[in-house]
Length: 405
Image 1 (cartoon, rainbow, N blue to C red):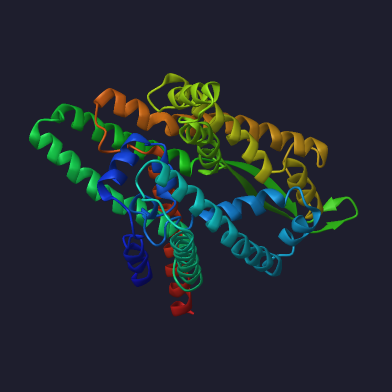
Image 2 (cartoon, rainbow, N blue to C red):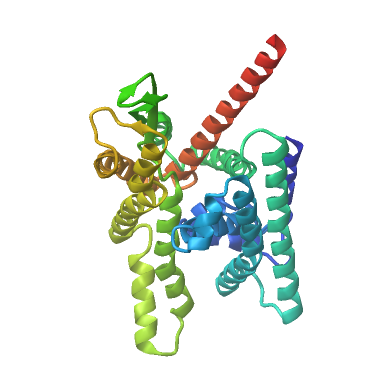
């Protein structure tokens, strides 16, 4: 708890030369960046010494997870158990350093071009990049300490605490608007009701699992089976988690950010193209919501079948003497698992797509801009809280068993 509190202190210590009012106006006009702010624990919006938070580490983790299915040597490490996991974690830490430098430089350049940060010289830029990179490494260290000695995943808990910490300011600002008459009380009630319904649906979908029955043969004598062990193979409705939204927002921000860079270009056609991109990829434009939904839906299928490989699962079952009742081992089992995952991924992808564009629709309907009903935020918080609860229950059960023994 003390380490988590320390991360909140780090997230509000600002870098020098930042205009607070200009920063608030910039984020209000670029609400798509709010998702990136989630993964920095508020460090991005505050332009703190932990500017990018644990974002570079998460990016590096995703990169190595994807490379593990492309590069044979990394795939072999993934199958080596704890030793392989430790090596990949070390590679991830090392990769997070240049990613933190690159992401910090890109963010600072965007903020400078938007007038949030004053112009800098080489020494001040080097200082800001060094401090922000050190801040990321410090949060990574705290996250790993929590994972090793605490309860729950440290990185996920840092992100979750950052999301929860942002609720206070949003609700306080909304309350002031209601008191001043700028926001309708009825709209606020509708907003909160939708938030509660969204929370219930997110919990239901997050916990939704299809259990494929599996039977293992204990031992055989000739063709006879002396015993069976019945088990299940759980397949989640949303196996991809929040990763498809991260992929989608990373792609959909590129045209808008590129457009903002080139809006003042001296070449006329480049300036017009940049203005078109800024307009079309604005959150208030219908094309933005459509493109965002399609990208999230497509990445849900893409990432699900990266982390779930029916052929490997069927091969592992056959090697361990397991089979799905009524299904032949081998290719038939792989095809059966593929069909199950494919059918479950459709509602999961649809759910993620709706969750992604929900803040835009709700804000347009209720005209409340001070609170972002982030389905992504709720999804992250619910997933982390449920996982932490399970780990606490496991710890309690283990200690109870030790006490009874």
